[in-house]
Image 1: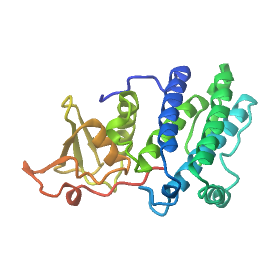
Image 2: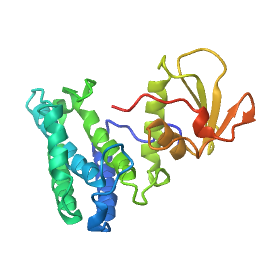
Image 3: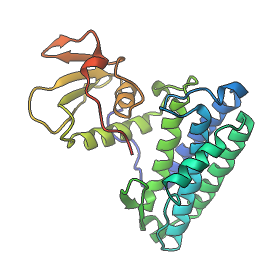
Length: 254
């Protein structure tokens, strides 16, 4: 649970995980009532409909980037931030059946293009909307992360404890590695309850607050999906009554 259990550049295996995650998401959408689409999600300022529209448009964006990689040309994920936001807003109010159909169709397009990709196309350097650069072989995992994180963001019963072990293992290592060099983050020692494995985040020196919990709960806090109240937090060996008040604010995920 504390280390990647799958190579993220094993595109065939990751695509299998993406398809499983998409099926779980579509099951959730199928059970939605029409009035739930316009209710707040767990993301600030976004309804559940905004989350669903984003999941669909993200698949289209990654498909376009991957098609460009097949041709050896760099393609932007979106025409621009304003266009991205408008597409999400335009699709947010649709009923669950339309949302599900859109997500399924967009997911199938991405899966088809990804399954057809091979060889040097996977090695082609692409650029994320955040500015990050990586080989195209990382795109299937990027899609998996979008589906898994945003499924939780719907706030409809799918929780961090439902994330697959492969996903939690990789993302926990990824985010702790990223935040380990974050100068603005006070030191925190993270301990995985299932295994005792420890990670330290925050580049600053000094005594660290210790936060212990299930791997999924740790990832939920690191990814901004939880406030840390599910964790056991110690400062100087003394358990804190209000863990969320002790843990530092983390930089937002891109």
